[in-house]
Length: 152
Image 1: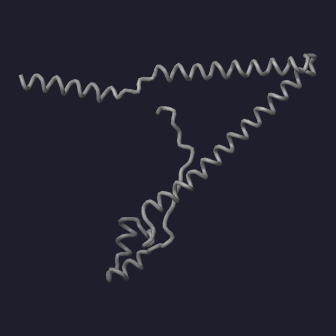
Image 2: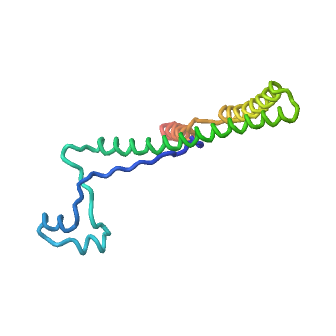
Image 3: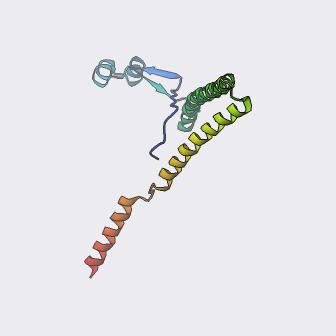
C-alpha cells in the first residue's frame, strides 16, 4: 500500500531494571566497564516470570492505539472547524443578499463537487494500480522456461 501511513507508535518496557552492577554480581565478574564503554549498555529491562512477549506486544499496541486516537481526535477537530467555516460562508452569502436556503445550497453543491472529484480521482488511481507481484510472476516464468529447456 503506497498510501499507508503510521499514525501511532507504541513502546513498552518491563518494569524490572537490571544494571551492569547487578549483572556483575550475578556473574561473579565485573563487566560494567566493558559493557558500558564498548557495548554502550548501562541497564536492561527484564520481563517478569509471568510476562510473555505477547504481553509486551499488547502493552506496546495499546500505547500505539492511544496515540492513534489522539491523531483521530485531531482529525475530528479539523472536520468540526471545516463545518464552522462552511456555515460562516453560508451566513456571508446570506448577508450579501442571497436567500439563506440558496446560499446553503450553493455551498453544499460546491463541497459535494469537490468531494466527488477527489473521490473519483482516488478511485481511478485505485483501479489503475496493479497489485500483482510482477517481479515474482516474471521470475516464475523465467524459471519455468529454464526448467523446460534444461529437461529437453
